[in-house]
Length: 145
Image (tube, rainbow, N blue to C red):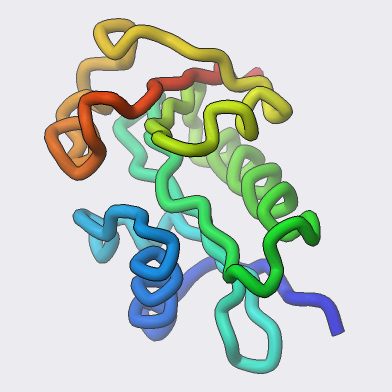
């Protein structure tokens, strides 16, 4: 059986937190942004998640994570692709992200590196930019069409 990708609900919060903690990813601000998360679920178990923090026409892609048992299966690619479609439907025109480990992964979706001062001001005020991610994290950007 393949995982079903769906919108996250409040009931998914603890499972998403467990995935993030296991992958050493930040959880700050997660509860507030959970309505703009997608999860991949199989037999009641959340195997992956990806979310947005939306700031008007700009958004921060955060917390893209897949359970260690499913990495390399394409599940993450599907979640990120579906999340970008969701972002466009929400009226987002620019998506940013910070990463300490996946800067080689995100160009396949059209993301390019940018300087932190090129990030939309509202996104720079997010918890991830203000300290949840280290200053050494790479900032990346994608314009949605």
